[in-house]
Amino acid sequence: MTHADRQPKPHGTPQPRHRRVGPGWGAMLWRGFRKQCPACGQGGLFHHWFSISERCPRCGLKFERIEGHWIGAIGMNTIITFGFLLIALVAALVVFIDTDVPRWWIASGGIGLAIVVPPFIDPFTRTFWTAIDIGMRPLEAHEVDWNVVAPGWAGNTAGQSGLPSDGSSTTTEPPPKKGPDS
Ligand SMILES: [Zn+2]
Image 1 (cartoon, rainbow, N blue to C red):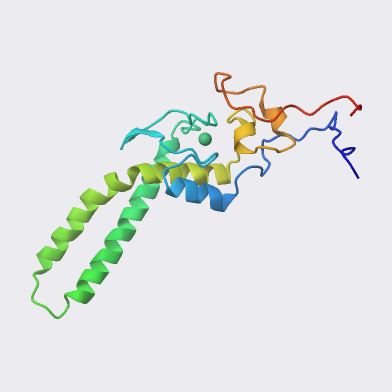
Image 2 (cartoon, rainbow, N blue to C red):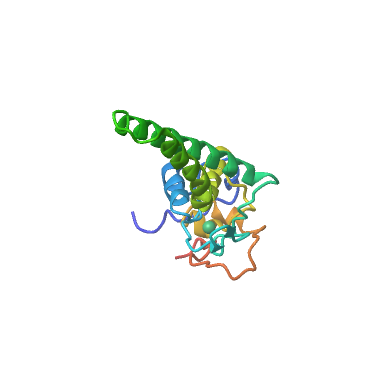
């Protein structure tokens, strides 16, 4: 067959909301792990170490999706920090068990870790938590530019009505032709 099958469906265009389109869990978690936008992979989201942009400059995602969103990132930060502490303390006790290294040295190391680790992993936990949040609560139609998040997806025209961006977003794909002529 030739190009006869590019007929747009006039009705029943699928809505992006509550539908798994765009990146999957693995891609989103990997992006979040690298301080990138989970939805589109855009980097450079932080003004400085502790200050993330309000929105992704590429897809328009507002990172603080709901009020209290960052509480999840703090919780994740706490869990990871305790994990670090547990591993470090067990390793230290195993390594120094038969030595005369004072135990308070080990304790001091643990306290140092508890002080250093949380601010160091803060930006990573923000994007990583946002990835988990999107995985659990899929993106709504109005949250992102679907031409960026899911390029080529047949339903992405449904997300263009309520774009949060200023209209300068990249729209590379032309809309499908309506006419039956070729
Ligand atoms: Zn993005």
